Length: 152
Image 1: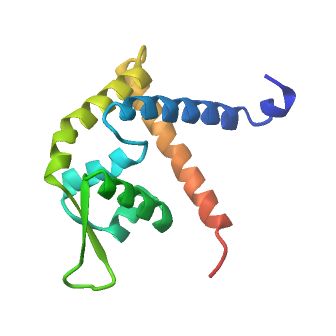
Image 2: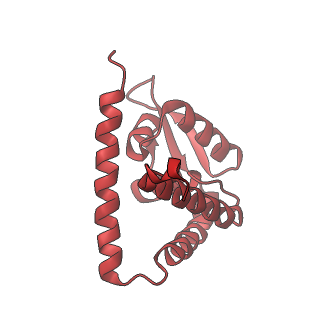
């Protein structure tokens, strides 16, 4: 490991793992016609039912522009439908289409395959420890990001 990377060895490891995870997820999701991140939107809609687009942003830790592009692509593919909210004219409701329901089993299989790849060779205790460590890292990064956010 080069000296410049050694000073941030955890950063480098996270970067490498995240890159490979996203690459493999992309390869697996391509088989069902989705891009990484789109399956997360679909899973939320399948599990929770129709959602306001702003709620999807919050649930998935996304931003409005990214969610708008994702929903538009899913709509163009025939997997979601947008409609105005009956109680708040400013809000848009996103709902899964009947066509998307056929995709659900395939997405669940892709996620199971990705999970198998991630957890290969790790025992149940190691997996539990990894999840706890990753949760802690996520909390640390969330707090750091909040401190860096510009004041409105």
